[in-house]
Image 1 (spheres, rainbow, N blue to C red):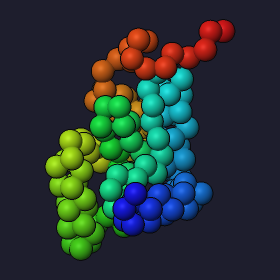
Image 2: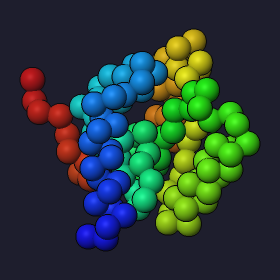
Image 3: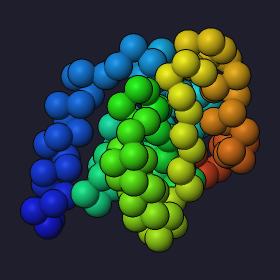
Image 4: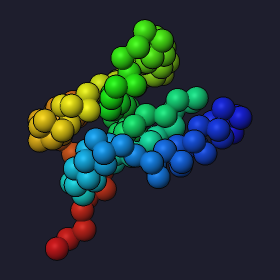
Length: 129
């Protein structure tokens, strides 16, 4: 494992312990989707970057953007990260914190609309009742 990947994994572990309120809200709903066959991960390292959430099977990275994503430098950094991820076959969804707070159902629906319906033969099915 390369040094940048080791650093990313260690940093991701720290970020999982310090999720923002918007991330916590969305994660609770994505965990529900996991029970239906999706495999979302939180604070998922991808090379030197860490996606807030990811569905690795579908190569979908989800970024929750708050106020720290509004300066010119931060916008350039986000564009560089998005280009890195896209060059490696990932799709990137960006959702603003305010959208998570205003309509969590719509934010979850937006994420799930980007994915095919779960297939029981490809993804782990939930355990029987």
